[in-house]
Image 1 (cartoon, one colour):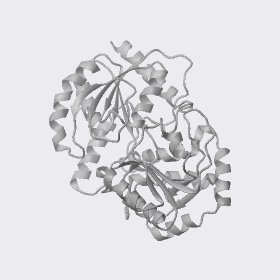
Image 2 (cartoon, one colour):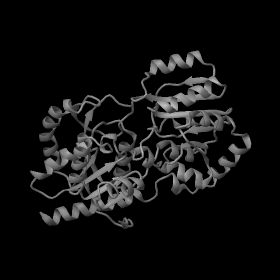
Image 3 (spheres, helix red, strand yellow):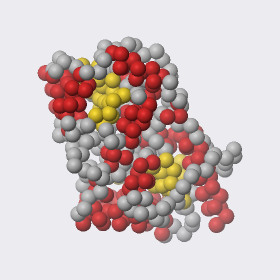
Image 4 (cartoon, helix red, strand yellow):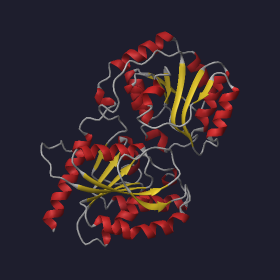
Length: 386
């Protein structure tokens, strides 16, 4: 469904954000962008061990959640409902990240006694939604049930709608795509120092196949720079990565970082960016095929050619624009040879093509204005209904 163009005037809207974790970069982007457009935001968030970051908007804690243990979340969720209800009474829209947050918001809306818009943002299609076992079928049924009852679906990739919501769930719902682009002016333009030939792998480091490849590249002489937070299914800790780097002259692990604050310093140290999404072998239906990575947009901004996984949305764009290389992670030896064969001339061509890219490919333009207009309309409808 086509999204509306932004209007020239909008009334101040109120939105209550429900977050499963408070330090996620994408959540912060959404809240800051909407706040700048005069949307009044309140935030309720759970505390979880996650990638370190700094929330830039004040929030009220809903308590602590354990990671990947859904049964232990039931009690904290029930305890959070009265607080969510109390805040929801004063808002025009409930903005949810994650299926569990959407379920809580829908339950509160049932007893709220006033009309509020329900928005649901999806940045990944979780593995549990794509399996064939009973647990996956139940999860898909819950997702379909709740998504039919929302007012707008926000997606970070068009492919999510085409392949999952329309293709698998057979839904037709109002949606808007807001990719993981960078905010205009999010960091000052600067002349980046010319680095030596170095491959960078940044962010949440959770792909065993990616680690296998970049580690082997380092062993065979390529300079590799890692920055970020290791997470399952990569069964390594920060200490493990530091130990591995201490044993290899060509491998450097610089620890975790804050985005966007330290991005310029990180990207200026590499010439090539590993932008592959976590790899799942023999999965014809999978999130990695449809997702859009943060590294793609960051690499475009910093004019760094990138390595993407073949068959993904990022690779489709990279190949079309000739700004990097797509590789088959199912064939690690071929990937290693392909990276070792990249010439300075090829890097120059990719970099020149990156320098010609229109900013709209990697930086936000009117996406948040469209979203803010929808929230303003929600406020208008709420007032009329009252």
